[in-house]
Each structure stands twice: as structure tokens, then as C-alpha cells.
Length: 230
Ligand SMILES: NC(=O)c1ccc[n+]([C@@H]2O[C@H](COP(=O)([O-])OP(=O)(O)OC[C@H]3O[C@@H](n4cnc5c(N)ncnc54)[C@H](OP(=O)(O)O)[C@@H]3O)[C@@H](O)[C@H]2O)c1
Image 1 (cartoon, rainbow, N blue to C red):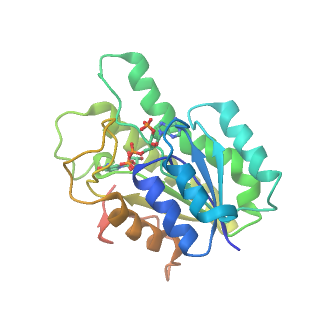
Image 2 (cartoon, rainbow, N blue to C red):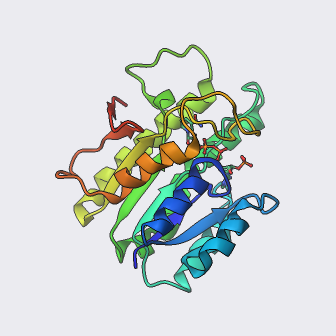
Image 3 (cartoon, rainbow, N blue to C red):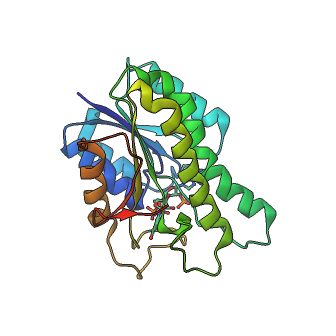
């Protein structure tokens, strides 16, 4: 059975992804950041032992280490790490708020990769991250939203460096732009957007589990399967 670890699984894209992986026959370790939000536990009732919940705050070293130990105590390896957790951030003149955006969106995937690397090395070696068109430099039309956009540019570079370091060991990578999703990034379920989380995550799931003819080029692909410059 293939095994995946998914961050930010409480709601939005991450939760929708949990369902696709389980229905695809994977065992899922789902990072639970919001224990007060009960939907993951309802999924657990539906899926039983194929879904294992674990507390996970990707901005916290101790939490990430504890999650890696939790999985390592139960599994010889994992096959895939999917970094979904992300925040939009609040006021950009609030230094604590923008530092937290970088803690979650940028250092979160880095922490997770470092902590789970030994388990990943013994599995199928795929690392995925939810990025955004907001991080693309060459085609960027925005005039504000500095911190979030900069965080997504940074996570793209992070994936590039990981690709350079780990590709020769057989690791493969997916950088995914989910489109404009009616999720919870503003704190409440958005009425605006183009895609439901389930629609966007259906595409993500297929892109994450499908091998490409050539894995030696790092690409950012969107929900429609189109390549974004980054
Ligand atoms: N929605 C869009 O239109 C869109 C577009 C482009 C890219 N993205 C990216 O797609 C990814 C998924 O976003 P989404 O739309 O599904 O948003 P979402 O509905 O807010 O889901 C993200 C989940 O991550 C959680 N989270 C926040 N901080 C965390 C932490 N420190 N550790 C672990 N989990 C944490 C969130 O909890 P809280 O709700 O408590 O924060 C939430 O449950 C993000 O990386 C986002 O940047 C989204």
C-alpha cells in the first residue's frame, strides 16, 4: 500500500485531497491543525484505518518532529509528501503576521521535507507542494499582496533547490497551482473563486500520482494541467 503524508488537511484543498488518495488505495497520514474543526474526524469514521490523523503545525519545529516520529513508529517508509498548508496572512505592516506567512508557506515545506526525508528515501520519493500563480515572477500582474506572493516565489525556489539536491537520488517533484478555489483562506468558506476544493484537488491528485515521461524538468502546473512560468 502506498503511503502519503498531507499537511493542512482539515479543510479546503487538503481535505478534498485526503479523500482522493484514500479512494485511490493509499494510506493517508493527515496533518490536523484545527482539532476544533470536526470534518477530518468525520472522514476518519468513514475511512477507518486507511486514514490516520496526527496533530501538525508546519510552522513549529517540535510539532513537525513529533509528526515524523509518529509516522516513523508505524511505517518503514512513506511514498509521498504533499505540502498543502498555506495561509494568506493578515496586515502586511504587522511583522508577526508576515513572519508567520513565511513560517507556514515557505519554512513549513522545508521543515516537513527535512523531517520526513529518511522515510521518503525508503519509499517512492515524491515531494509535492501547493504553490500559486501569485509566486510567478515573469507573468505577475498584481500590484499588492506582497508577502503572500513573495512566499510563493520563495517556495518555488525551495523546490528548485530540493530538485537540484535530491533528483539524482530518484526524487520527483510536483509544484501545483490549484487555481482560484472557494476554500477557507480568508477564514470562512469563500463564495468567490472558480473551483470547488474537490474540483481542484481531483486534478492535483492525478498530477501527483501520475509519473511523467520525463521527471528531469521541474514544472509548475495548474489545475487545468497547463504549465506556468515561475
Ligand atoms: N484558495 C485559493 O484560491 C488558492 C490559490 C492558489 C494557491 N493556494 C494554495 O493552496 C493551498 C491550500 O489552500 P486552501 O485554498 O485549501 O486554503 P484553506 O481552506 O485555508 O486550507 C489550508 C489549511 O491549512 C491550515 N493551516 C494553516 N496554518 C497551518 C499550519 N501552521 N500548519 C498546518 N496547517 C495549517 C489551515 O488552517 P486555518 O484555516 O486555521 O488557517 C487550513 O485548514 C495553500 O498553500 C494556498 O496558499 C490557494
